[in-house]
Amino acid sequence: MDVLSDVIALMRTGRPRAARVEWRAPWGQRFPALPGSAGFQVVLEGAGRLLPQEGEPIALSAGDVLFFPRGHGYAMADTVSTPLAEPACDPLAEELGLFAADSSGGAGAATVLLCGGYRFDVSRAHPLLADLPDLVHLQGALGRDAELSAAIGLLSTEVQRPGGGADTIVTSLLDMLLLYILRACFATEPGHCRVGGWAAALADPGISAVLDAVHRDPAHPWTVQEMGERAGLSRSAFARRFTALVRQPPLTYLTWWRLAMAARLMRESDAVLGEIAARVGYSSEFAFSNAFKREHGMSPGRYRRDVGRFAPPRGPRDRRTASRRTHDVIKT
Image (cartoon, rainbow, N blue to C red; front, side, top):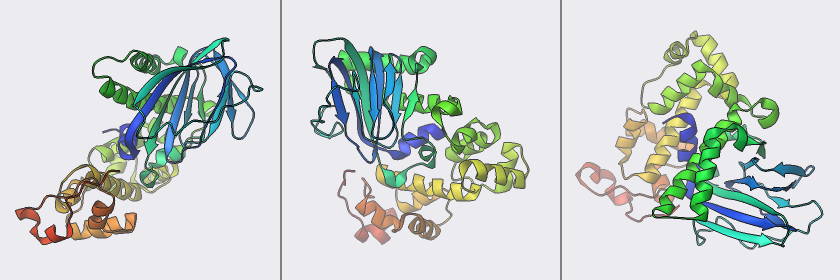
């Protein structure tokens, strides 16, 4: 998996949500802060105003894409003077449907918005997202970015007129859309997106190649020397450049990634701890357990019991620890 795909696979939890809403003037709506989430708004038709919690109103036009990577609250309206309706419920509540199409407001000019949200587990946040501002405003993105525009078009159509397999299609399109938004953001001029070191890291051929290799094969016995060779740099030059862009030394990032992957495997698979340790590059379960406890503040066994979705099956290969394991499935 590549780095951007890993960000989504590592952090997202539960099912994302989407809605296509036709707002008729006058209209105004508050969108609550949702810690541990990210959301987007796409102006498909018409115009409006974004009213952030801090700062001046922002004029919006058809083709604009807004991304809120940390779930900050905001409001949207046809004009800055329109009264704002309070949110009726949590748009990411599990009891709500995966997607919806609706209309609201008065009887005036229409503004059509496609919105969506994702639950993120902040305890396993990838540092890449820390470089994003609280609001990413991609002005006129639908007219410039063919892939992003195509994903939004497909999602809008499926939400408005769902067919067979709509649940799977919408979920996949929402993940795809999030990746295209991140792609567009990291490819945008710094003055528009204001991203930090990770944009430069992903754009740097050598550092990007190393990150991709480490993400694809965390179990490899990586050394700084080998990473530098893959980046086409000397050991010391690579270490300096990697640390400056990623904000962690190469082996520190490697350790973090290995243990993040291990936590994901414990949540999403029934592999025993020895197998997980080997898959992320540890030669013994003892060394893995010590490293995991330093990173996550608890032993792998406790993490699996308290946080993980799966508990390992009892069987001949794990008799030593069978008494300490549970077969309960814990929903995250």
